Length: 322
Ligand code: SF4
Ligand code: MG
Image 1 (tube, rainbow, N blue to C red):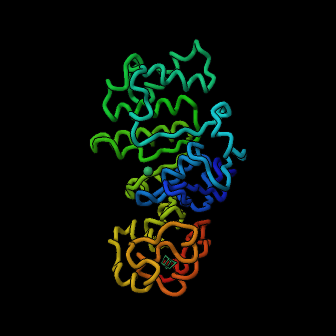
Image 2: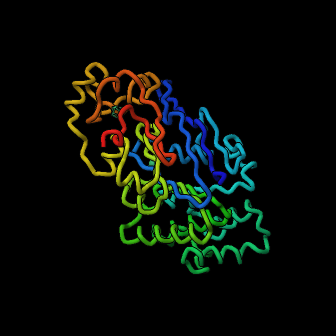
Image 3: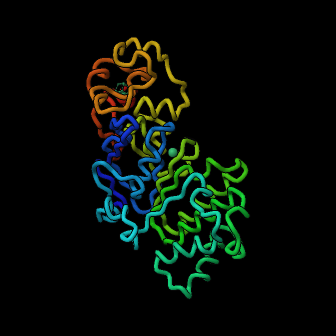
């Protein structure tokens, strides 16, 4: 099956205030199949949102490309006029930030329906239908964002995304800003909509339990690097990268002092190796890795193929230890 999304060697560089370049996302490749949910996990600052934003064109990539249904969209998506007809949508952590407080819900939804080329005379009916889909009454359309709770606003944001008839949704921490009591409702809504509409999803979250529950495959980011990608069931049961193991087995950071001694001179004061091109001569996880040994501190680890198309970026993946 042709993947719906193909990311090839995509990288993102930020320029810091001091004028230095910071590689926020190291060249990274992945695919998402039709109807598939790929979970994206990693600590804050690992590049999860950067990847989501680069895929949809909100953050310009510094290298590589994004193929959507086989078409190179890495430049097109950045240009709003070229956005017509593309059907990747993003749902953000804070729905309030993506809704204009001065405009009624009807106009927020109407905009998207316009971009999706729904005829003017059809828009009201379609908007009411979208409200119903996300469990809100049609009357909601006549009100303002401030009239709604956080969970309701996220329903509205999801309705607006659906208005563009996407076949891929990038959901960036869609429930983490919500009250615990409504998190499950919004998650179930996304799961139902995914099934009803045959959606593919990139589900970004730091909640590993949720990610392993709803994802077919999982990608693990560490300091802007894709360190492991594979079937969710396999990674949860038998993670291959030592960092994935720490995340999924809820293992605390190991004896950092001990590993630091191994790398004295390279990371004497820091828990983590700085993410810079110069650090490509070692494993970025080395200072925290309980399994670090020669040549982890001097040679960047290779990307190794595991069975079933899974991948791991490590000199000594855990599956070889078993
Ligand atoms: Fe640990 Fe070495 Fe693998 Fe890095 S390459 S994760 S330091 S074993
Ligand atoms: Mg983020």
